Length: 114
Image 1 (cartoon, one colour):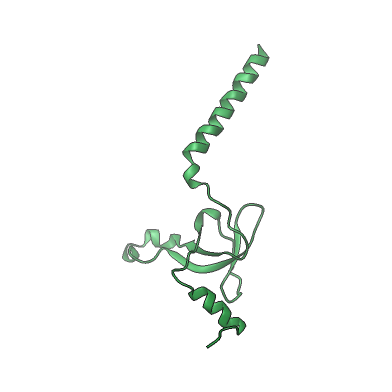
Image 2 (image 1 turned 180 degrees about the horizontal axis):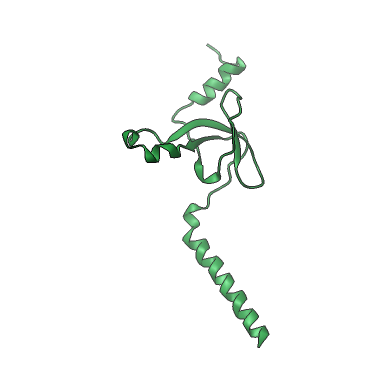
């Protein structure tokens, strides 16, 4: 009898994992690696009625490292580290519209040809 209950419990857990995996599949994304450019969600704007149309994402910033598959440490593009750590749910990858970031980085290195 215990064996049957144990198997039934195991099957229920597996079914639950599959169900929630399908239900939350849209939220699962590829990990962001050190060196990639990201934006940070500005939660303070949620409670300020006068700033409803203001951009809710700050940045861009660069990923320094991820701590134990949890929060990220970030730095500005010029290398200054930001205070604190940022949750995965508050970060999204930044996709530039042109090659502006690439040209800025080349200028810093002195590799721009005129």
